[in-house]
Image (cartoon, rainbow, N blue to C red; front, side, top):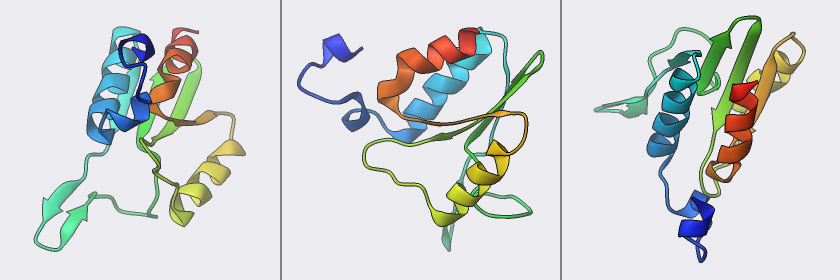
Length: 114
């Protein structure tokens, strides 16, 4: 994909929503179970319906003996304090934890193919 848009970073031409859909679809093709909590718009703004601590990673993937937690960011998107806390906590467990951006798509595929 990078070759198709040589003057642009992939991060600059894809939305987080589209990037998430791309990663979820790729994982599904490769046999992963996937969970992604989508935000919904309310009269108070965008919210993700969860009970618990804020900042949970965007996606959870499970296949055989592997579990991956991934936070997906596009452009100059930065991790929130709550997201950092979750990712740091998860890194202590026997799971894989990643922060993925659109420019990482080849690496994402490599990781998911293992």
